[in-house]
Image 1 (cartoon, rainbow, N blue to C red):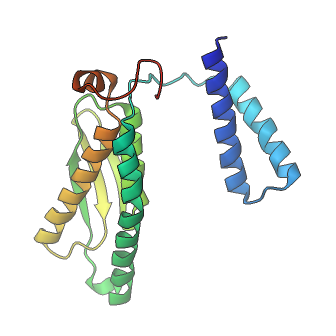
Image 2 (tube, rainbow, N blue to C red):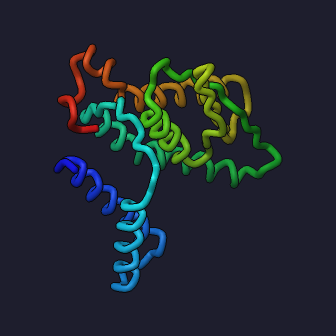
Length: 184
C-alpha cells in the first residue's frame, strides 16, 4: 500500500473518531479508546468501494461559503422564529425545483444538499440525477413572490457550492483547482 493510501486511511480513522466522540458527547478515556478501536475496525474491514474522486476544491470559494454559512444560519433561524411566533395557521410552505448542472460530481451534490439542509426552514427532499433536478422543501412562502425569491436564493447557493467543488474537467478547463492527485 502506498504512503498516500495510508494517509487517506489515517484521515478516515481520525474523522470516524471525531464523529464517534461527537455522538457520545464526551472525551472520557474509555469512550476515546472504544472510538479508536471501532474506527480502526471499520476502516480495516469495510468493503465499501471508494467513490471516484472527480471533484476539485477551489479553496477561495469554499472559504467564502464557510463564512457565508454563519450569516445564513442567523438569518434563517430568525425567519423560522418569526414563523413560529406568528403561528402555524398562517404558514405556507413550498417545494422548490432547482436545476443541477450536468456532470456535477456526487460529492459536490452531497455537499450542496447538506449545505442547503443545514439552514433552518429548508431541507432537500429528493435528488433526481437523471433529469438534473433537486427538490427542496422550504418553510414560510406566503405568496408567489416569496416562492420565487427563495428559489433564486436556493439556486444561487447550489451554484456556489458546485462552483467551489467542480469536477476535475471543469476545474482544469477554467484553470482553477488544485494539482492532480492533491486537494480532493
